[in-house]
Image (cartoon, helix red, strand yellow):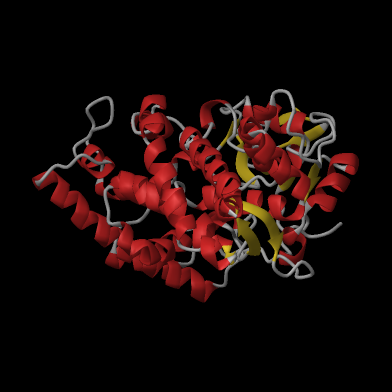
Length: 414
């Protein structure tokens, strides 16, 4: 069996996922000792039992040598030891953090952000529309969600490049594919970010503003408990800055690749933009930005005919489950008329359903509405080149995407 820890396999894991679903939907990886769960039904069954299969699993602790002392020393001596993200924690902390985050992304608040998201999308396309080509990840997919979340947090968009370096430094270690030296470097970058946001939090407490940082800086947990600084910094840096841009960037990039490779889909969206929300759900299903999440078994149990012991670790492979033909007709293809297109697992289900899902969907839908309106004839600049993905056991991030296109507005004016 192929090794999913191999970057070449990760670049296109779908043939492996298909084989696993058919032969061993619960498969113990000999290289790691934890189990891959690849069928939709089994993933959903496990997700629906969050107390039996808990989420508080740190990918760093799963490495053979665990969290390295050098990394911990960077945090302990120079910054704050990060706490688990909302998605990788369990009650009672998960309950408190989720309640806090849920206040920030209500349906009304996300709806009110739509004009700014649309303005940002148009502004980014304005910068390259006349060139007839661009490297799309850098020109659009990366900056759009970063600009949006930075504006909401209340920090200047001019600092996007450093925010991107910091965000990558948070995400890369969780991908379980980096060397020790890079892991230490990432810790140093995260500490830089912590000190930046500590100053911003202190400033908001002296001079409140209309932004998320002020809300968090002046909040307590629902029971009146003060939020410790290391937890507050983790919420800002992990749950908001990193989670608020990395997966959305991946989704926008994946969707543009599909449009470049499948002209019929692009034309269908141009003919009927009402299909764009379904297209977005198909992008999320087919190229799940979060390919998998860990769970830990809390007591001996049996599922899918496999006996588990307390402490066993499972990796729920959303990227595999979302292409399960037992759950989705013609599962490997885009269906712009798919019924219940949002039934995929890209955002999780139940207690751990992504708090930021409404914002991510809004950004994706508006992005593709603007793209479809502004660009036509989208194609790969180098159609024979191999697409490179950042090595990661967790995410699926296209590193670059060179495209060519025509300006739809210019064409209409001729």
